Image (cartoon, protein in one colour):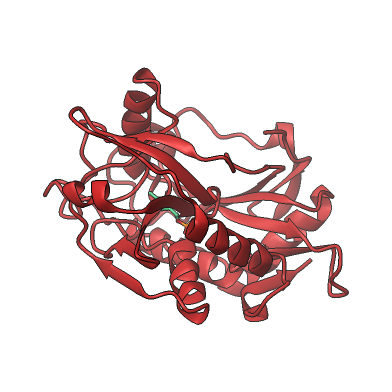
Length: 301
Ligand code: PMP
């Protein structure tokens, strides 16, 4: 992953190297920052602009929700933040990549940082695809943080220590990624991805409650139904995985990433067909590039 040239910080465009925080920063010490991950795509054939940002409004809404969970209001309006995202994409001068709005809190070293007002940075990176050929996945021993111990609907930096530890476990076991079970032993999600299974052409995904309400998951459910697939949001047990026909991860960064294999300590499931996954991937990639329906999801730059 390369760098962008400019980062938007509290209303100003500053060069990449100048955007830094003090080591006493509350968010650095305690993981109290909140953030988003958004992608923008090249749209060569579209006369509305060179690129389009996918579901910007939904990401900005989730960012404001996450900040409010941390007890702080963002001192800009949603429109101002959306405009700042567009501006940051423009000045960085590349047509496809990833946007990281980050809301963080100064406030010193006490746990209680009060309502000090959030600082905001918008960072842009060039970023290509995850594996299109598919990933090998293990079920880690570490469980997904329980929704009774944090706000699982918010993208709080501190929530990601769970993802990082699970991912380290997967790497240690020589897998590309992991699929976490929740504290009830049911399938939840990847470290930064939602999961779907395909059984008899039906798209099945764990219900909300113990997973991040993923914007891509929502897109896949809507696009799936509009393209004639049945969908089901429900509890998925680990034992069921071995009867599924296909599996894929989805997320802003992961887009639609096929899963080749899921293994726990006792059993291994190899997925041999990707027919529905490839179809969903094609529909999704056409949608984010403005070649399909749902132009209301796109912000042209
Ligand atoms: N789950 C987790 C834990 C994530 O971090 C992400 C990435 N934001 C996702 C799912 C996918 O969410 P989205 O589709 O909104 O990017």
